[in-house]
Length: 321
Image 1 (cartoon, helix red, strand yellow):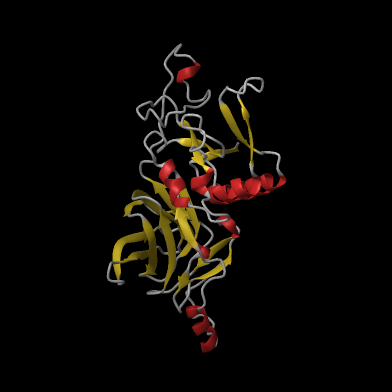
Image 2 (tube, rainbow, N blue to C red):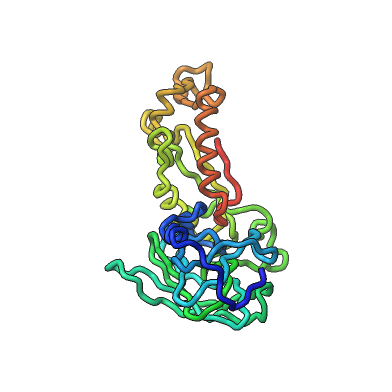
């Protein structure tokens, strides 16, 4: 939208106050990916100052909106969550007729804002031209962080912010001549979590136990999932993720159920022998996969996993079995 530096139309005071205290309808905490990039639309910010930046239509912008023109000392905030300590390269896509400058502030241990970085907004000559700012490196500890972007000079539009992991840990491999498909990361994947020094593949196959993932019905333990994904050999790879429910044959048959106990109580199990004609053969136990209750609970678990990982570049295949 075209703008000028002319004095803006004054809104009633009561509306300005409401803008200062009512959170944005789309506001949320953004989970920064530990691999690759995370893009945050500026208009989805958590809060703005009274002398707003404000969301407005923009055909040139991602999502069809920007966070529009704001005055000196006005600000907007975002809230981000980091699973593990990580270094990010941060940049913004902006427009500004004359150029501008933003101050990035974070909340310290005493709950006070402190300056982290000063971000120079390039001059684009008009409000329809957008360009990216220079990137800067930002170290974020695990946890939730509140960030405020304060305008130091009149005049800036913000389309989005990008947080790019400095070193995402993905293994790149140049295939030697005649090395064969075993060494080619483009032909298959590696089950390398149990031999973490193997670097021939950038894709790993990883199990998570349903009993650890959903210990209580409809209560999902994402800390358990993250712990598994960050183990040596899985960390830094794209993953084929499978959650399992059955009996682990490596331990005594009565003590090795990998699913949640509440599911076993609901569905029951199949029992038999490895050789049906030999009652002395090994005792076998299996989940009732065709049971309607099992199917319903599996669908709910798959839905939870899909929602959790839908924007996560670490996982590109989910399996259930």
